[in-house]
Length: 269
Image (cartoon, rainbow, N blue to C red; front, side, top):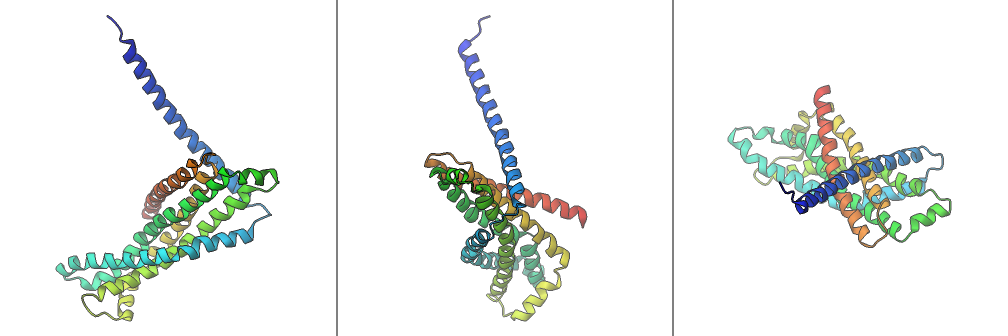
């Protein structure tokens, strides 16, 4: 029986490529956790860059407000317009404000806002740090005894961790406001009546888990964006790749963190 050596060589090459891809994947996971460990160590340093932290809070929070404003209003408006016909068929239009408020506060507001932030903030961090890596500014900071992790990474991650929950609360408020505007397209509902019906069914334990998980959303977005930019290569193409991969990975991790948070909340409540 003759053995086809060409086919065997192709199979060996394919197996080697798959093994290499798996090794690169697990190597990337290890490097990510080592990067997170370095960042956590520098977070508790006495020489905290407070002025840079405030600047990053402004960059992340204030400059993202227009996008979050439009997203929040449209989110509440669309949810109301889509849900109202179904509730009319069941004769439960009065439940519309409470249903929309619960949907926005518990799930839609945090997740959609976090995904928007992953696209804007994560890509911005990846591109900014990636361009600094390409232009060797990070290497120059290390040579000049400046701690780039402390100055560049810690401030951005903490700023994202703080500002994303605030942006989520802002988007929730605008989402309920947009829902009130959507309800007034078909019938006249006063502002006070709509909000009283909306928050009549909302309890504190509906609000607390949703706020807690947004801190993890912000930390994930900041950490992934900084990691992708900080570990970018030295070619000009690496800046675009860092920004793109930061958005994809941050969005995926936001969904995974949300799934874990929902499971934990379901077990505790």
